[in-house]
Image (cartoon, rainbow, N blue to C red; front, side, top):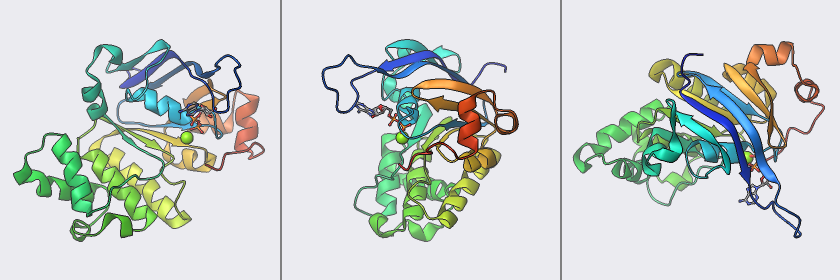
Length: 255
Ligand SMILES: Nc1ncnc2c1ncn2[C@@H]1O[C@H](COP(=O)(O)OP(=O)(O)O)[C@@H](O)[C@H]1O
Ligand SMILES: [Mg+2]
């Protein structure tokens, strides 16, 4: 790969696990390395509790690794302004945390944070909605009365407001019914195709990863067990874990 867009070099994140009983903290992530090429959809696959969300939080500076480096365009993000990193690397959480008010207010607020002047906010916001597959009439609708799938699209539109170079999506379909989930999967494809966006897509669903991702990292108990082209992961998994996971013989997680 020529210089990756985003990479981690042996990152380790240690914190006390839930329900710690005085035992020493275990690493949530241990020596995880990955390389995401510009313009690809990169999957992070693994069961519940594997550390997928923690890894995403490291990638946009919401958390800091105890060891290892995170590189954005080859630059260690620990030397960059955190606000800037979060602007360049947008994140959509598992359940869309919209605030009460209209869709326009939700997206408009993100545009304000991104320093878009008031006069051009609505026009820009409508472009973001369109990119997220929502028509103009959603602008004045009450955000919390939309369906889960529509709310997830608003969350994506909001993340697009800052014009991020990389979009991190944390199991964006887990709260959705199958048809709404399929539309989000299509949307991810079009963000890559039409905007050339680099996307990191977390999922515990192997079939979804196969459909949507170019390459992926399989994460188990905080360690990367293999990274490669999705087709190769499926056809010739090099780890026993991946083989069992593909066959659906391991818990894929329900979160
Ligand atoms: N804020 C937190 N404080 C302590 N432990 C946490 C916290 N968030 C997650 N963990 C623990 O870290 C591990 C990985 O969690 P997470 O990154 O959420 O995994 P995943 O997204 O793959 O389900 C789990 O053991 C989880 O219990
Ligand atoms: Mg998670």
